[in-house]
Amino acid sequence: MQIDFTHCPGGVADKDELHTSFFSDTALAVQRLRQLEKASFSRVLIDDAGGLLANMDLASLTLRSTQSIGVLVSHWPGIVAPVVAARQFAALDQLGAGRLALRVPPSRDLRETNDDSGLVATLGRTDEYLTLLKRLWSNAQPFEHEGLFYRIHGGFVPMKAADGADISLQLGGLSGTALKVAGRHANQFELPVGSFDDTRRLIERVKAAAEPFGRAQRIRFSLPVLVGEGEQAWQLGGASERAVAALAGFVELGVTDFIVHGLDDADAIAAFGREVIAVVRKAFRRHEPTVAQRRNQKVVLRQVV
Image (cartoon, rainbow, N blue to C red; front, side, top):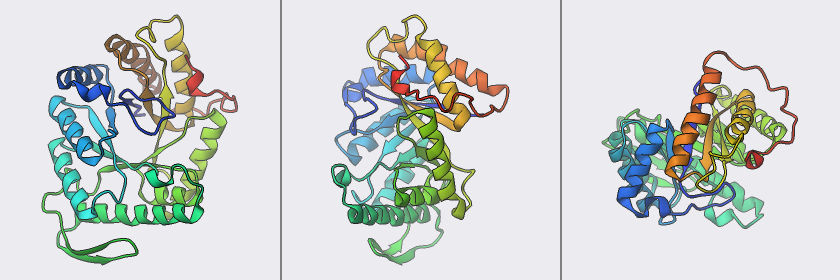
């Protein structure tokens, strides 16, 4: 079983935007990225407050400075036209030889509203946008499109992504409409922080939403983890053992990627890689796990350390 760990620079699990301190010093950022790679992190999340262009620049820096670590770039549909976005991301994926993934968060405009009609419209736009991105990454000839939200004449991207239309898409959400969009498009579903029982129920809902599209067994699941704060986060007695035990429980439920927040110190990164990443991967390399007996416990990852 493949278990991945995604590093979230400078952020915390309940914030929508991440701090930029990780990348503010380019030389230090490159050093940290290589430390993450050495510690066996799979990806780094890039979600700069500067927007798409800043994210593209930081993703390019990451891909040029490393050999194996992937980039998970946050991108809100509607910021740029689908053809422009498809070209930019295809070129970036070519640079990284397939190491690019896109994270599609909830719309910024809907974060503070309970407007159901606005949510449905926004998710409808997201659905159409992602459909067009995948078509632009794979079509051999220009095409025409006139939809509810986008109109394209002669849509074509000459430089395709490294794996065609297979750039990984990470989505989330809790509403029925959000789950339907994720069921159609997501390679990876981003779960909220929650208990074992909450996580199990949401995974079941996502798989049910993906079933009509024949994708119930194709979606992987990602979960945010707040591992602690301060330089000594992974030198505290028993911290790594508790983290491994909690993460293992979620792996047994079907989670195969952890978005790790609160871990920027170089020594802490190295210790986390040695004491947590390596141990969790070793535990699940030997056998396919059974469902956790403790899945009904109300344990929240935020309380691990």
